[in-house]
Image (tube, rainbow, N blue to C red; front, side, top):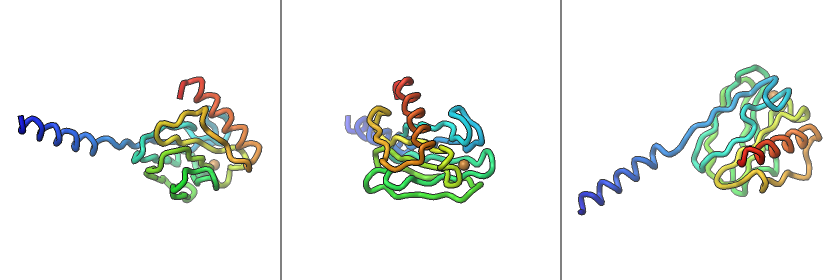
Amino acid sequence: MIRTALAAVLLCSLSSLAWADTHEVKMLNRGPNGPMDYDPAYLVVKPGDTVKFLPTVKGHNVATIDGFIPEGAEPFLSKINQEFEVTLEEEGTYGVKCSPHFDMGMVMLIQVGERKAEEVKLPEKLPPSARKRFTKIIETAKQAGL
Ligand SMILES: [Cu+2]
């Protein structure tokens, strides 16, 4: 009996080690959502998961949008043309942008935890193209039931 319980505890701790996932995002000149795009542009991850941004096409980076990350979350910023990994611990919605192409609407949403697309609140201040892209991303995610 005790032996079974120990085995169960051991299995649980092993599975929690294997629990964190890495999600890859391509940075593209043209993607499913239009010119200057992240693919995917909507990602749902668990707290502790890692998102890896791939410089599939040159000229892009990734940075958090001011006022569009969960409370207590650390902002991040990558260099242009570099692969970049970030581990997201705080639950909530992260809005990210490509610094040179923010005005062209190169943005994406990362939902950490149980958030749904319909709960996303866009910040007041956004370039019009970024707002348009976010609206499209949210609509697509809602249709997919995310
Ligand atoms: Cu870009």
